[in-house]
Length: 227
Ligand code: SAH
Image 1 (cartoon, rainbow, N blue to C red):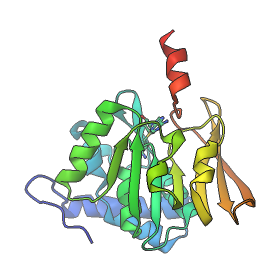
Image 2 (image 1 turned 180 degrees about the vertical axis):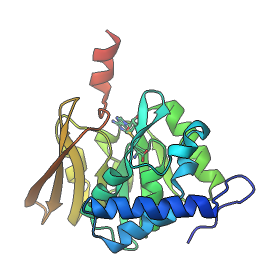
Image 3 (image 1 turned 120 degrees about the horizontal axis):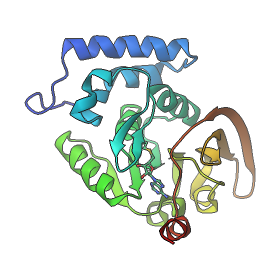
Image 4 (image 1 turned 90 degrees about the vertical axis):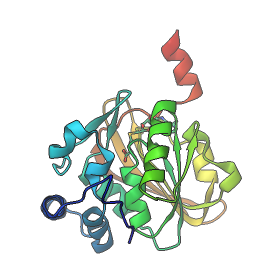
C-alpha cells in the first residue's frame, strides 16, 4: 500500500466513508472484481481533482480537469480495469494519463504503469502530482496512438479516450496473451472493445457496452482542428 503525505494531501475518515459508499454504488452497477473494488476503495480520488470539486469526488460522475479534458467516471474506471484483468507485476500501458486517477488504480492492482498524455499542460501537472504522491509511474508526453515502442511489449494496454479505430501500433505492442481495452466509435459515443492477442497472428475481439469518452487525438486530427 502507498503511503500518502498527510501534510499535503488529507485522506480523512469522512473521505474513506464516502469511498466505501462509492464502492457499493459501483458494485451495484455490476462490477464484481474484488481486486478492482478494493483498488477503488484504496485510491483517494479527491487527490486527482481540482479542490473546487472536492465534495463531488466520490459521486459516480466524470469531472472537468482543465484543458477541456475529464477524469473518467469511477464506474468507467472500474469497468475498464475489470476488463483488463490486471495481475500483479503486469507491465501496463495507459493511453490518456489525464488526472492520473486511472493510473493510480492500475498501480493498486499491482501493475507497473507506463502512461502517455497528449496535452502538455495536463502531462506536466499530473507528472508533478505523481511525484508529490510518491507514485512510481512513468509518464510520457506524446501521441499514445503510436504506443511506446521503446518499452514494448506490454501485458496490458488501456486506452482512456474515444478512438475512431483501433490503432494498429497498440495491437502490435501487445505481448502474446496480452489484452487491449479501448473505446471505439465517434465523438459522441463509443463501444468498449477488448482485444486479446492470442498469438503473433491471432486476435480475439469482444464487444461490450457503450460509453462516452473525450476524443483520442492524433497528429493528423490536430492539423484538421487548426485549419
Ligand atoms: N485516464 C484519465 C482519463 C483522461 S480523459 C483519468 O483517469 O483521468 C482522456 C485523456 O486522453 C485526456 O487527458 C487527453 O488529453 C488524452 N489524450 C487524447 N488523445 C491522446 C493521445 N493520442 N495520446 C495520449 N493521450 C491522449
